Image (cartoon, rainbow, N blue to C red; front, side, top):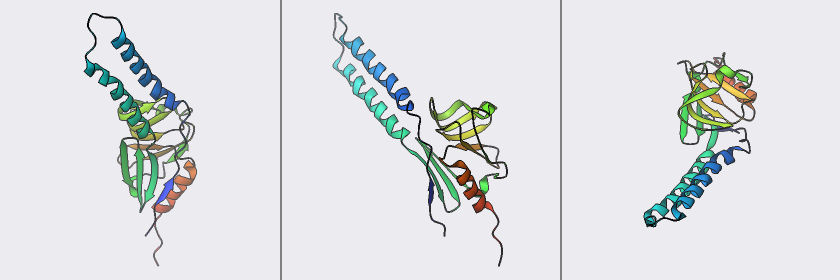
Length: 181
């Protein structure tokens, strides 16, 4: 029986956290300014609960952003991407058409429309439609080295492992028929 093999995910660009926290902090600042402006009636005390609520949302999203794993467990590929998980058998992929590519060069394959996902500049996780309108499940942290895994049912899996060619070679090795003795 095969043991679990984990593939490191390419690190997030440093600016991704800023894209998450700048809007959260701006919203908190705007709420505080709005509630402390001079008016004839003070804001209800319940209005102040919005500030810790927005802060809590920012913390939850930060922890979600850290949930990024690619695991090969007994011929099943498991992708954990923020709030989303995808599990597919190795046989579900058409590995003859799988390849490593750059989304900078292949812009028709770039995730465009988020259908159920988590998206920040430099980070895509979850379900997307690509520019060519194909459905894809993504965990993309590095647009220059993306492992594109076509599924036999027509969908795509797009991943950013640190060593995509090594991961593809391992998947192909598992998919190869075993010789009979």
